Length: 344
Image (spheres, rainbow, N blue to C red):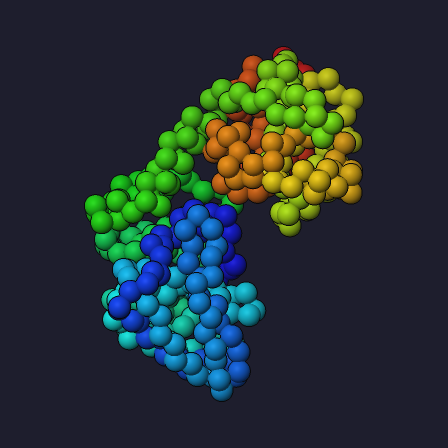
């Protein structure tokens, strides 16, 4: 299971481990783990460590005070992460093998057992296709409409995709009972989908007014006038953006003299010096803007940005033509659109 990302931060529902008289015990035996450390994390808008579990000769026993039902993540040193569901007075037993941390056997409450059974079924399938995985996850979600496991599976098999189908996600959320519908994170996701519908294909690109690295104000109306614009959301700390920037440099070089096309980078950095250094280091010599508010950026919210990098193509009339374009498809997509425009 891959390291948590921005989408996981938004979706996995955690209510927090607080001071309480209720103690939950986690005991485990993971063969081959030896003497090691496991970190216990919760995710509630940030990726926050709440405890450390020490492993001695493959085994561990750890007590944690839990106030209410909580979904958490076990993070191993090899950066594998695994979900675990906690509740007050639970006795959680974890078994597995260090050679395969993607499949652990976790007992102690119905939710851990549901997820263990689901993953065991997948393991028995060998190497199922993405379509089969989604079908299995959807079946589980619709049959377990009040289980927090369904939120985890919604994230893993539908949200974390390179191009999520938010209409499908909206429909699956609609199948949740009130106990899940009332979770703050589901309310937050519904708000995001509502905003996405305002900034989806065919909608007018939202207005923005941001400053470039020299302090000059740049507006949407100014940059998007009478030309196709590629809008790239990125940040200096984003590793995937490094790969994306290499491709964007090629695109900029190819179309630099084309009066019908332009590019703008909108950074979600909070450190303006790090942003400026990245512009210089990566030779990002097209328009770059930043308001140094990170994920709190109003522009990022208006454009419904949930992951980096995100590429959006805007028409000369200011309409969003494409969004979430994979970096390796960008050049082909731009070629296609500009050639169509030449024929008009």
